[in-house]
Image (cartoon, rainbow, N blue to C red; front, side):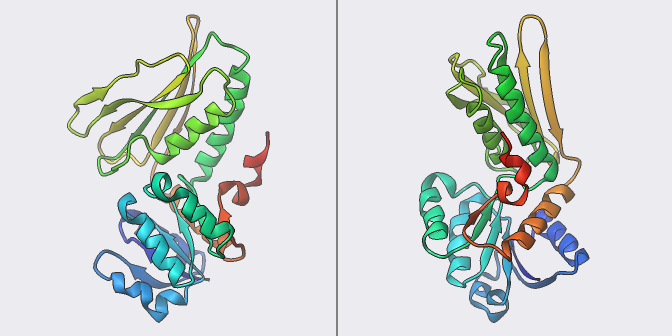
Length: 255
């Protein structure tokens, strides 16, 4: 399979290693200094492009890839609020293809399934309140993480006493803390920590006066995310439309 890379930072390089190791060919690498290559024959020859860049430029990258007629895999969240419906419509009605996920890790996919199952159980036990925290490296711009938001939405879908998630505390790279976890009873606080080079840690905690229950996903490195992105690209090469992890991993549709 011919793959184009959009973004050549740490994730892009890790994706390149795994893709080559699985027998794929990297036909184009686009970074900040060669944006004109979106119109190159090499980029247009790709079966799929994998995009991991700054959230602020994701939408423009999508439009350039779609214009070139290249299917796309991306983990960016910067486009969702402003352009979400437009992108989805382009894929469902306009003949474009995007495989999108806030997190491509198989471990996170399993964790997400466990999270929803636990929320359904805890729906029967109102004495437990729930909160969430996520920790990432100091270079991550968005907070909460896209994965945390997806996990929070999974809780809201299955826990009747919570109707929306809200930002909790934010610990900045310099250690200063802003925000608060104080919120209404029907709100789920999601706190964020930015420190070191942490690839990603997500913690969901149910607490009562008697005890607490916590589930955690702790990424050791970027390999799990990169492998998932390549698996998504392999799937996307043979499919069309607006795709996601539930297409790649059918167990996510259970329950």
